[in-house]
Image 1 (cartoon, one colour):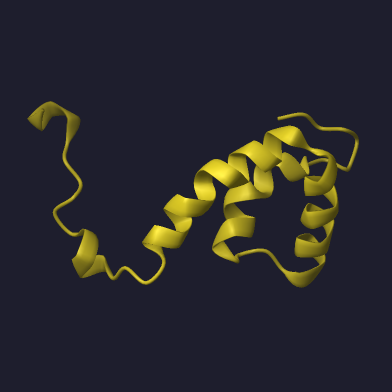
Image 2 (image 1 turned 180 degrees about the vertical axis):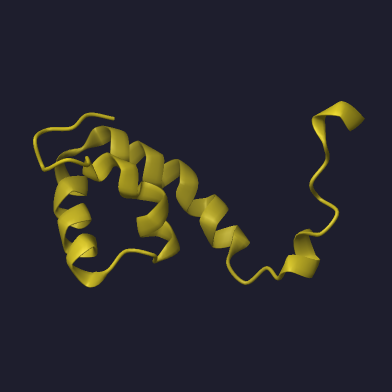
Length: 73
């Protein structure tokens, strides 16, 4: 994730927020402009997109019990 001088925070950190719909309108426009030229973000959005889509609509009850503690393994 490279900061190409777009400010103090690189748009590369916004892939997850973008896919979750958690960015404001101005940030969406900025991220989409960044996405056009950033192969890393394109790859990350492509790999995370199906996961986010699958998770949308799940309730806490749907995922309760899926979390296992590493020491339980």
